[in-house]
Length: 256
Image 1 (tube, one colour):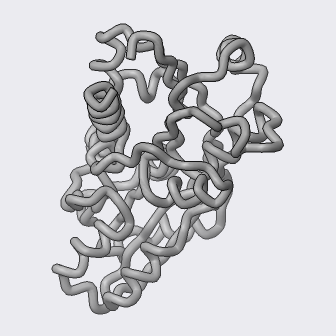
Image 2: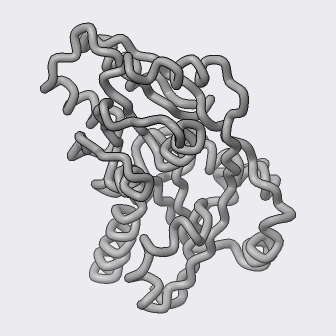
Image 3: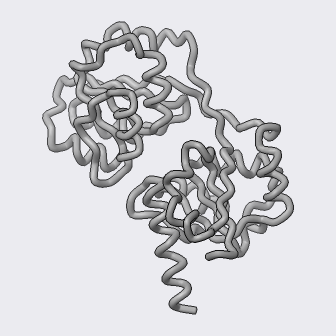
């Protein structure tokens, strides 16, 4: 893998620690965050939820970005009386950084995994607050509602395309030589990559490249473009991605 360049659609500060073993082996990783997170300001829905936070039994975080944005909006509010669930360990770690105690982390880092864990709990007449992005999928809402919960989803951040002016070095590197491996962390990260690079024929552009997605939702979105996805980690996290990439190239090397 020494001659490979891996592009990760996350910022270096956020993602570098999760690729320590690859970096120690001399693999070149280009961090190219295609998404810009913008906290929601002056939202009546968010303000109402925060004002009535003590009426909620559960607070559910589906991403680290949700933790950051919610904590910023609720930093003066005591959350000790509300139970907290997180979609995975990275999101839970972000909660820990904010001194938010986490009660549930599913074995499967996904909405389906969260629903499975909550199915073990009596959610009848329980109120659940899910802060997320304006683009959040409704799978989790529907699943918790079916379990009897009263679910309130509120946007705490928007997802926008990053500014190419802030990615000049990375952009020049990509234009000079296309990376060998691409790691996409969400459908938006993929769509924004196409937009930033002005790619009209995605199937042609990615031909011969190794594509890794952080989970099955992103995998499905990319396959809709007629692109093969080579790697999907067992754990839907950046740590899982690194482990899966190592495994993929170990297997292909042995086959070769």
